[in-house]
Length: 304
Image 1 (cartoon, rainbow, N blue to C red):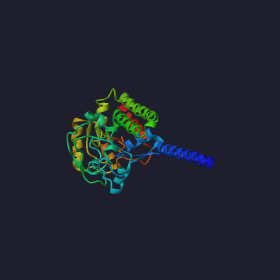
Image 2: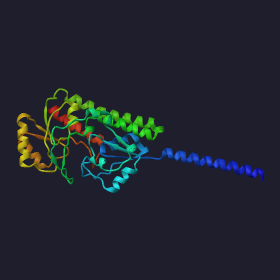
Image 3: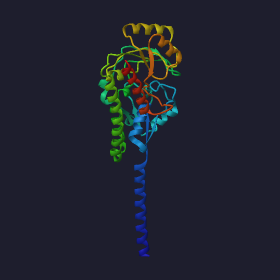
C-alpha cells in the first residue's frame, strides 16, 4: 500500500509538470492578434511578425482608410486585439471617437512628430463612397517617404517584442530584411532624381507631401480623383498652374479614366501612376507596388 501511494504521488507530480509545461509552451506559440489602421502597417507587421501574428486590416477595399469609420463589430475586433498599430499624423480620426485600450495602441510615428508636415490649405471634397471631408492641417501619407516608413517599422518591432520577448531576435531579423527593401527603394529614387530635382511635376492629389520633401521634388498639387472627370473649374485651375509650373507629367494615385488622360495630352501633359498604397490591393503587395511606382517615376526623370 505504501509503495502504491508513493507511486501515485510521483505520477501526480509528473502529470502536473507535463500540464504546466504544455500550457507554457502553448502560451509561447500562441499567435498575437494585431489590428492596423491602414495597409502599409499591415504589410510591415506581417513581414516582421511572420507566422507569429495574425495581422488584420478590416477596411473595405473601396474606401480611403484615413476617413473610414468602422462599424460596431469591427471596433469590437480592434478592442479585442493584442496590439493596435496607428499611423499617427491625424490619420484614422475614428480612433478618437471610440474606446480602445491605451496600452494596446502603438503610434508608429510618435518618435518623429517634429517631422510632420503642416498643410497650408483646407479643401473639402470626397473619395468615392465616403462622405465629404477636408484635407486638414497635418499631412499623413508618411510611408511613401521610405526613411519614415523604416522608422514606423522599427516601432512595430518594439511593440511586438514587448508582447513576445522570446521572439525579439526573430522580429529583428525580419525587420532588417524589410528595412533593406525599403532603403533600396529610397536609394534608387535619390539616384535618378538627383540631377533633375527642379523638374516640375503635377500631383493629382495632395498626398505626396512627405514623398516630395524626402526626394526634393518640385511639385504642385490639384484635387482630382482618378475615377472622376474633372469639372470645368478644375481644368481652368490646372491651366493657371501650368503657366507658372509647366510640366509634361501628372502623377496619379491609380489609373485615371481615359477621358482625363486624353484631355491632358492635348495640353502636353502625360499621366503616370504612383500608388500610395493606403488600402489593400487586388494584385501584388506593398513592396511590389512600390517597385512599380519607382519604375514609373524613373521613366519621367530619364526621358526628360
